[in-house]
Length: 114
Length: 115
Image (cartoon, rainbow over the protein chains, first blue to last red):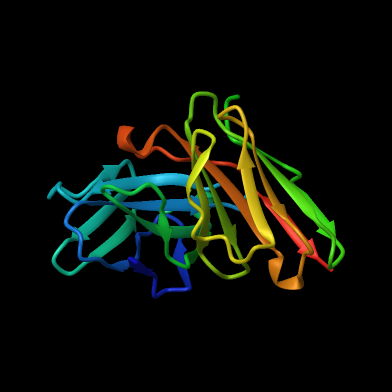
């Protein structure tokens, strides 16, 4: 089974600053997808960004971007110009190319201070 | 509906009782997933439905856990003889068939507390 590791249980960032959340994964597959999800107190998981492993270009969605290092099996999330509304749990997830279910890390709690 | 609906939002039950958790997926989503999120943990996969069939039940932690889906729509997760370790948030997600993409929509979960 693929393992997803988030080594930072908690992170803190000041409003308007940039923060990077780390994620590493273990797989022998070449075809897979990686995701970052945000979970606010409402508990609903919200997709932040997705990366297809076959794409070399890093995915970007507005203030959110990833640094995808396939050889190193690393998939970090950068949040630029942090806002108070970014405070939440962030989960990194993996899905096999031929699979269906998401395999999640344990999450990073992001605190945004004014 | 517009989103994935789960009920109840919160459930407190006594140890040994049975509970049923309901998930109403997005209309047209053929795939449905149940996950369990224990305190301080990530999401643990429980079961996957494609239509009314469950090709993967490998994540169900014991035979006290079962799930069904009817009409290719609503799913019910049943936990019999609840134990304190069953306390967690149970999240449901739905999507189109996995070979059609990977846009998963999650519900807000049911927080189960076993006392």
